[in-house]
Length: 433
Ligand SMILES: Cc1ncc(COP(=O)(O)O)c(C=O)c1O
Image 1 (cartoon, protein in one colour):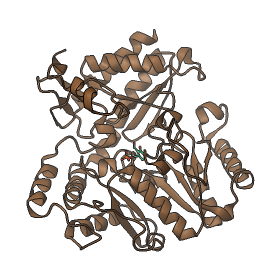
Image 2 (spheres, rainbow, N blue to C red):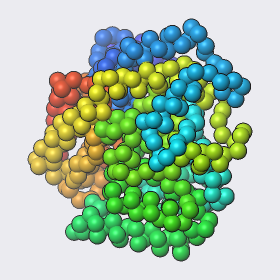
Image 3 (cartoon, rainbow, N blue to C red):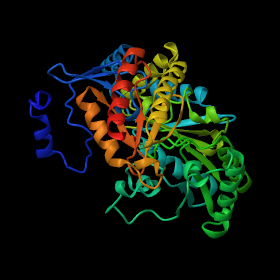
Image 4 (cartoon, protein in one colour):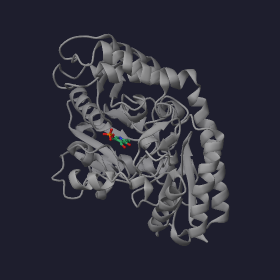
């Protein structure tokens, strides 16, 4: 195939470890806005956004210019050694955009997994306790603690033993476990079960943190309910534990807000950010209540490259782009369009059992014959492969890979979005008949 003609895929297979996953055979040479291109000129509409990174689009000129200017001035200093403008300015920006209910502080690292690791270390030092409660369906990264906190076994098989003092409870799933129950009753039931776990799994006096994605990302775009998150907030406060939101996939405009916590009106003690924060450069953050953040002793958090000046410049410019171009509001429009098309498909196709998400974080779940116990993983894989051949790159998610999610750049035009959705929905429909 022409787009493989430069043989890069074969070269990759020869020298790159096969454990690094690869969703498509695309060989990307350049990208702009919501379009990916190979060296032969073949293009794809991007519904993956580099897994939720490119909210402001690919190569936003302002971000590229900021990176270039910064690179000519200072590539690296090391915040452990000296102070520089970008690190401080970015933390100022983060605490202003993402207040945690009073004085707020931030620290910078390189990846989502690192942010999660550091949030847990901070929570442990702030509470003097070890235990962490996390949830089924969660993805928190590929470091050993991140994997321990991650639910899907496919991501972690053969990598143990895992870290101790991690307790996993069911992420409330009203579609499967709450049929017939209204949201309030289901929330109450989920919170009673959570409280019960404090007698059967882990005593509240040992609990350092409750860690949750406000909307499951890799787990299939399942939003937690406001009532459940509020309940966790109350439980954490009552027991002196830290409520930690992992906003690595939900952050920086994806849900129509800087953070999904702002959508739910529930403020965590600590939160983690990465992906769309850097506009394409590797940078991540932990943000939290100042007194909690300052519980971490000097030397226990950070790292050589954390908050690298070039990455900070990219993040600051990227935040400006999100703000100036009104991309948080655009997320609502993009999401509404995706939802509309997916719901239309749901009316026509039995396998589409659910359409869900918030803002521009929308997905549809597919099950064979509409039977919730039979995830249509093959159908999803085939539909995505066919859509790829027709010029759309989209990703699956969910523990069984039977959820199609859209993480397109928020700068995507209505025309690109409609064309991409038409192809995606057509490929599902063909196989769902
Ligand atoms: C919610 C969440 N947390 C953490 C991570 C890990 O981020 P990274 O791959 O940057 O380590 C991811 C990555 O997909 C994620 O979605």
